[in-house]
Image 1: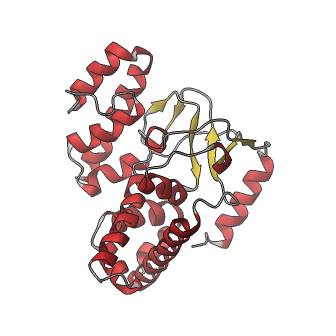
Image 2 (image 1 turned 135 degrees about the horizontal axis):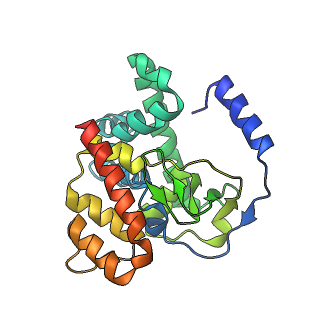
Amino acid sequence: MKRSPVATLRRTARRAATWRPKTAGGQSLSVLELVSPLRYDVLVRADLFALVEQQRAAGRGSDAEVVAAAREGAYAVWFEKVAMARFRPWVLQDRDLFEAQFAERVTCSVALWDSFRSGGFDSRHPVTLRGARAGLPTDSGAVVDRHVHVGDGGHRLALLLAAGQDLEPGHYRVDHRPMARLIDNTAALLGPLGLTEAEHVAFLAHGYGAAGVSGVTDAESLLEHVRTHRPDRLGELTSVLAAQRRAAERAA
């Protein structure tokens, strides 16, 4: 699905003005650690691939049947609240166009999954990560100190997540162009998806060294774990929790 011509021209001009050479990936990265805390949408996209397999196992794997099933789940929420709201907001004013674009996106994602299943990750199309300075604000109002973030390639990251694979050095590059702020898709999805506190915390735990830790089941226990084991990350986590909670409250 393409951006509008005007958006494409603006993006091209912005990239030309801020161009920096991209660098090759230097180490294997955990997808879950990479996408937490700001990119819950990658988990939603990975769940679509699981849905495809479920539909096929049940004998309902045609494109139309997969689209219908996806329309009732989290992928449709991501498509509306993130993909369209951020990049093609005018589509939200035309229900027929929205449904057509949604069907196209799902069908393309199914084809991507099938290609991955048959041939593995296509290194000709690496994921682009963004290098960033510490203390960069997000559009939700949080402040994040980490230096590497998801850029372009959310569905490709979701392929790896669905398959239980890491992001290998040959599968990504880092774009060092300066950024003014980061996008927080978790904040945009938290309320519309109706995530529970336990689900939210389980996702955040991956980004703060607490995944799978016994007793980390809510925000207070996550904060306490980080306060004890990663005090350097406590300020960021506190900021992220506050910003994402505010977003969920506004969406309620």
